[in-house]
Length: 255
Image (tube, rainbow, N blue to C red; front, side):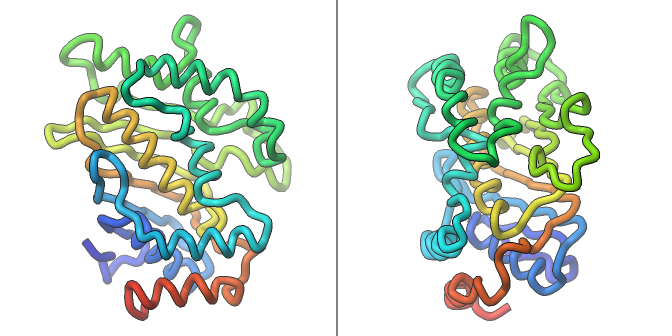
């Protein structure tokens, strides 16, 4: 489904790469978008449809500026390589907890934490793992209210700060919406850099949605990312994106 031509703040595509490309064009044209809503609806066994040429071109531009790849950004939300869908979810949580100290040391961007760590901690005593708590609650009995399926990332005690730049967490909140048709995952970002982070964030959210859908025995049908303020990165100019934009124009046609 193409972008609504009457509302540049809303993008809906089956293909994740196409959705990101539409959002990129909007932000480059205006400098920013407030808000920006991006929906991805095309999945094969929970895996989002992508256009490898677009992702490869973006990764090349990111690498040229010493920035994290789409895969690395995605893994901050869901550590895809650690998940074995044939094993209990507890194995994923355990494996992640073991390597978390190394992940935090691996990059300065991780010093204040990682998103999957926040999603699997911070709950009340005895149910600290938020993700495990909502999944086990929903699977535990029939008739569980769907509003219970919420995951908090922003922690006022830690994250309200007077610092000029904080960097983490931009992702604030995740909700899961089970319907008769399947699982929709919704995420809210206060701000988001459209080049450096958005593609990887969309990918990570889709992978998180796939995990949730698997645990709830339903198909993943939609990922919606609501961003309060979508920004053009200051570290990558439009000229630096010439190769990326050329690939996008070739695949999608001119804007």
